[in-house]
Length: 142
Image 1 (cartoon, helix red, strand yellow):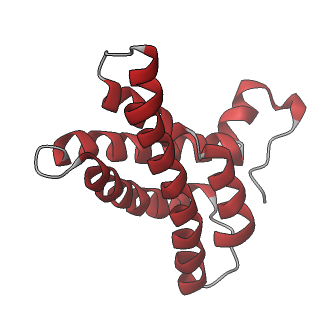
Image 2 (cartoon, helix red, strand yellow; image 1 turned 60 degrees about the vertical axis):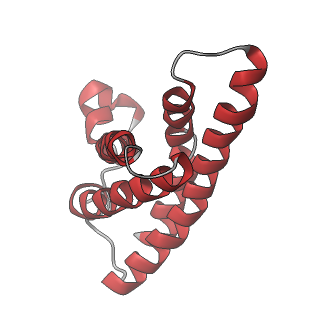
Image 3 (cartoon, helix red, strand yellow; image 1 turned 180 degrees about the horizontal axis):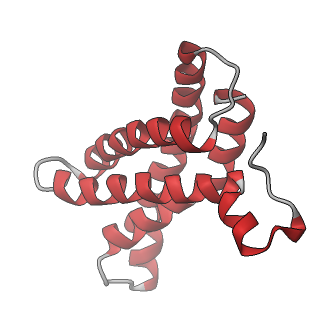
């Protein structure tokens, strides 16, 4: 039984769809990522805090995705973990690049002064949602 949604599934179908579950799990992992980055920034530089927070979010995402989103995977655990890390390395590069680009270049260029690192990191966390879903669906948990 797959959790893919059908157009006639309505709101209930959307909530049960694999992508919607991925978004909910990703939102939880993003909250861990985002919240821990704020705390880690008390002890680490902004780029280091982003990477460490991303690792905490990645562990959260792997466990929740395996339990709730991609339950019917046929691949072995070590295969899932290897591809999960590879997909997330690509995603953390996207997150770091976007966060730094916004916080260090674009926001100062346009005069954005309202918590630029916080806002830049929020955007950076959201950017890899679709690429990560596709990577995990077709590689990590196939």
